[in-house]
Length: 221
Ligand SMILES: [Zn+2]
Image (cartoon, rainbow, N blue to C red):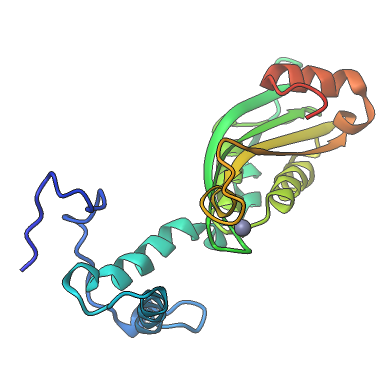
């Protein structure tokens, strides 16, 4: 019998309240049943050297399958949808709109390891703006997939460009890759910075500089 205690050092935050329901084939996604997904987790646990049948791991495959539903919920989202509702009456506002420090969690497609970072998104409106939270939604929809940081940066920029048709778009992402900090070369404290500039952000050095100034990422990075 599993008896959770508050001070158990190895306990995940949601370990106690998160007893998942039994797998059913009704939960199948993309041709994979939840039972198959859980079996795959058991195989990885064995591959790692542990015993999936021991008490502490018995519900782990269910939890992992459930967590995948959260971490990879971006596949069920269409980022363009978030940008459909625009506002045209903005008092002639034609200066930069910038949302900075959008925190995100993603997973690298090479190791399935977490990528933890921040995105900064800006655009120069061409008569239409979106609700600012929608930019964060777009970031989330792309982050909650298996990703390569360079691709994610470009995907966000192109999504905003095609949906809003602004005069320009800038996206800068800074992120730490756990495949690099916890394995391989074990470099902590390093973050990777990628940027994608479109339209006036690409062509006009002043617009680009203003954007970088607003998000406090200095040129040369
Ligand atoms: Zn990786």
